[in-house]
Length: 206
Image 1 (cartoon, one colour):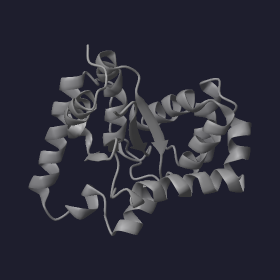
Image 2 (cartoon, helix red, strand yellow):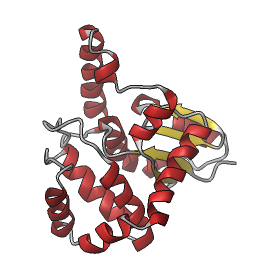
Image 3 (spheres, rainbow, N blue to C red):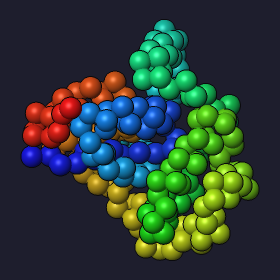
Image 4 (cartoon, rainbow, N blue to C red):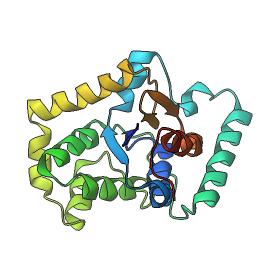
């Protein structure tokens, strides 16, 4: 029986952010079961020979238009009215993702994810700028200096590499990716199936 749902996450994925904002409504039905696992999307792409939709479908404008439509539909369905496209996208997320594992070590992951995600996909900030990132953390009451320091710890760097490799080893090729037991689901539009599988495996349903 699945007791938790693994959610592989990277701040650089707008779809991962949309899933993050949709989780409370899902967890209201099945319980607080999602475990966020910070993995480096760039590393996953490199290892699996994958590319972002913006790059992969650059020559197919109708596909990009449809992807934008699907985002609009998801936003309306889940009430994610705060979502904004980031004008600095794409942004290298290595520092942010190491910071996530530093936040795990320091016991502040939930606040860190909220602050950085909001800065990226609601406030439209250049989160690749270290001074901007630091201010976002400080404004959220987070120990920015401690997070930056721990981000340079070899164990923290290794933790990010290990989590990234974990996703690859499980057959993942992008983010957001969910696992309910051994069942993999990719993309924001699979949240319904994720919930259904969790319930089918004996998880809680309201």
